[in-house]
Length: 273
Length: 252
Image 1 (tube, rainbow over the protein chains, first blue to last red):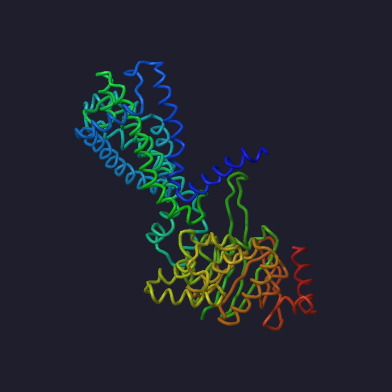
Image 2 (cartoon, rainbow over the protein chains, first blue to last red):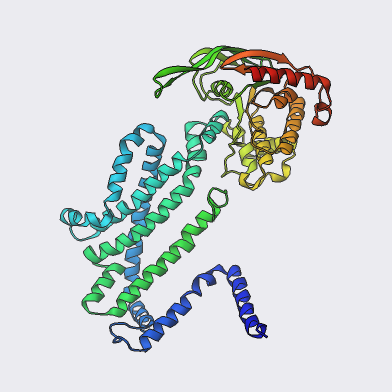
């Protein structure tokens, strides 16, 4: 007689599993539903004044208002363009430097300790110096983001290059490959899964560093919007900014990083899913 | 003249921990005429892999000379195909791309090199796996692709470094039989390194027993071909030769 009560639950669970297996995106969305409900309930109970702790509906309204005025999109664009430009520069410089250090024992000995040293000096720790050098503005933000993306990419590229089995180099050599062919056919694809890991970390750190930099030295962008909202005491805009940061990372992961990883390292059996 | 000749080859290492020179290979001379199948057998540490690495050009020799196809060896090159124990297939290339890699490096066009690769894959019964990635194959199939990839580049000499040591016993016997069949069909010049005495005797025309970096003895293997394990296991000559080589290796 228990089964009368349990069976529907089992059926529901089975249906849920089948649904999210078929549409993995839904599997990423559903867990937020209870979270949103909890948030609404806490807000509606009025433990805190509404202006202090607004609910999902207020944030949605703020999203609508700011979008309609065009402010949100403009700020979002500013932040994303800074991230893309900075990340691209950091990635190219990082892969290049990583190949150099990974392939050449001399460069490795000379540069590895230095890389570790500067990697440990966090992006934000540079800000006081950068503000003196470059002032409040785009130069400082660009430096911060390139710096933040660069190190994870360099370190992981070096790791990737050095983890390619010696036999693969030898196999390519005895099949007649030139140094250039070995670079393009062995070293780059062999290091790619690690480069992707570096890029993933770099983008994650870079995104955070950018928001922090925008708060301190920015005149536009999501970070600026949130910090500016603090002055006018607009909690709803701060929450909106936070939610956008999280959503944007989801988009970068789902649209860019994950597809590349599925098509390369995971396909080749070099990383486990 | 696709032969391999080694004259007075030696290799000494400096061991920085012991602060002295160690001799891994001592004054080895060897001749592998065109189209012959020679095995080098010996216990681990006897220097057999060091010899192969010097022939392949991966390691410089301390003294002596290696002549392949009439030319002095001074580094790795496509005239010496290598089959590795670790199969060393490129994980990011399909089986077809792996096998076509040597011809690609020679500048053979796409259509032609794929035709070459498919021809060699068919030789090893691998046509169905052409579009798969190495990680999707069994260990035995990976080794077959490794052999075929080296052969497809038509090297003067094929160097094989314990290629079947890490596959299971049944698969190993099948691979050995296939290798003798392929050798009979194409007659490449092969130098095969192994620590497995029956394997060395089963495959080769001649077995070189190596001990402490020196050639201990060379044993001619006068067995009929085609060879299969079903007949070899009952063959008296095979048993006697295996026993003889085993004694030499154990005494080494």
